[in-house]
Amino acid sequence: MNFKNMYSYNLYENRKSLTIFYGVIVGIYLSFITAHLTIHGDSSIGGMEMSSIIFLFVVGLNSFKSNFHFGLTNGVSRKTQFLSYATTVLTLGVFMAITDMVISRLVAFVVPPNNLYMELYGLRYTSIVGPLSFLNHVQIIMEQFLWYTFLYSAMAMLGYCITLIYYRSNLIMKWIVSIIPFLLLFVALPYLETITQGAVSRFIGIFISRAMGFTGQSVNPLAAVISFIIGYLIFAGISFLLMRRAVVKQ
Image: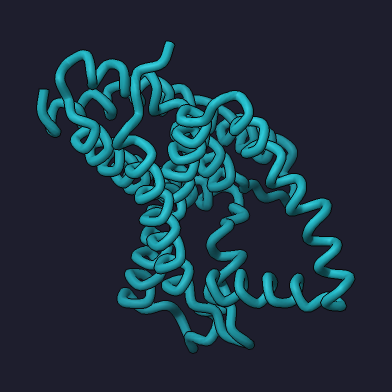
């Protein structure tokens, strides 16, 4: 079994969950549109992007153990398994970015959608004077597509990385890994905030803002795309290192 076979297997494994996910999404949108047309009120709908982020994160959490056992049973090396999953994640990111954008634009003919991307980066396009040209539309579509693709891919890889951390940990390490985030958030951070007079939270806020492309009065989604790519590569690197010596566990 080679890379192509494992890649195809990964996509095949996700087909059912994708079908159910978008079946639910389309059903929700159709129900809302029907209610909107019946009531004739002013309303809007959104949240599909957050649903996709959560969905892909969960996909990442559930994509290692069974596939890892299946791959080793069929003589697939750990490296090939990892590369096939990393490619699968990018493929799912591309597919779901396109699908979400298409659904959002179709819904916009009936109900104004609350688009997460435009809510964050709409200011970037308000400076365009007059009606949007063809090139302006292409720019918006391409930047939105890249933003969604690498955000989705990074979240799926994060879920995969977390699963691998738990898979490689013994019981004590699992407790430590689980407790550390809460200690950092509710103990270490408040303490540092007190002794630095809020400097830590200001630094974190500035760092996140710049990573997401918010600098002063300007916004740049491509900066966020670069951040998502870096996050994807970091999670992928950690996952690969953890996977190299992983053994089969029941």
